[in-house]
Image 1 (cartoon, helix red, strand yellow):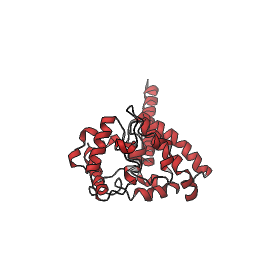
Image 2 (cartoon, one colour; image 1 turned 90 degrees about the vertical axis):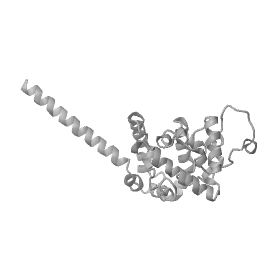
Image 3 (cartoon, one colour; image 1 turned 180 degrees about the vertical axis):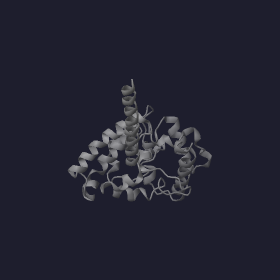
Image 4 (cartoon, helix red, strand yellow; image 1 turned 45 degrees about the horizontal axis):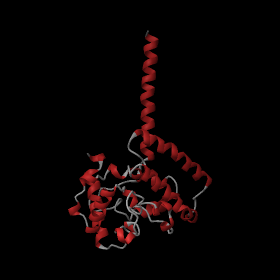
Length: 229
């Protein structure tokens, strides 16, 4: 009896230590420090990200790499971590170990993320942003109009905000993902007639409207992000 109890205690303590260590590693690989410095390939996109409102904004509340690229729920998070092993393999192969190689693959890499977010209805965006929490009257006119239409048509965040955190590839307008972004069940008309943007919102020069939308996006992050609620 004593031996069995002792063995059970050993397994119990070992389980706690294993889970604690596993969780510590998981959290470490989700940190901004890890994402921006673990491999030099990420330093290029990190510099782009630092110029975007998800990094720096009036409220001081931002979204890190893992907020956008790693699911919150345990199951999808584990799947994403397993998928990341393929990225480690390509890191070992040096697939994008120079800026030139990276730029050559930028569209392909971006499309992988866009497709994933389309499949999940921009799940990671919705960890912070919520249609029901949006006050359209407080948004810039362009943003309010686009969000109202997107809600009515059942669109998802990434269909319009493909340049929200990183620079768009030079040939983004040839992407099948971008060209098919408005493939909803509605009459076929040209973009001008439907009033839909001919390019991602972040790619347009909207002057003060962009700054206003950045401020609003930052305030949404600060008020609706689940990690602070």
